[in-house]
Amino acid sequence: MIEWRPTEKNNVEVLNETIDLYRYFDATKQAEFFFECVEETVNKTLPEEVEYIKKYDLLNNFIKNYIDMPDKLVDLLIRFLVQNGGALSKRSRNKEFEKLTDLEIRAIEHKYAEIFT
Image 1 (cartoon, rainbow, N blue to C red):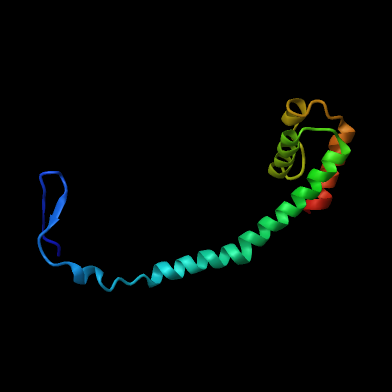
Image 2 (tube, one colour):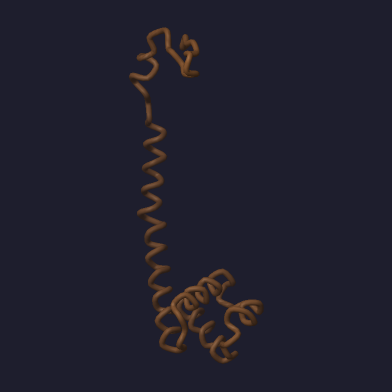
């Protein structure tokens, strides 16, 4: 429907009238999809994120009051707990958190279960 030819600068030159092809573009499907995305974000994603942040803050405060640990390590600990369903893996116990005692780990895991479930 569009007549064209290449230009010397490797571009395209349109040779016929094409305005009717674009004048009444129907973006109904795109608008509906965008609305559904916004609706899901507002009604589902944001409330879930706010709930997670509240729980994260509770656990974060517990850990900081229970053990003297740098913020980055507390964040890593919480991420490991979330990824592993509330239990600290053997690898992370022996590596990143080797200084924690079994009693401290159990207390943190218990608090995680209390807050996140």
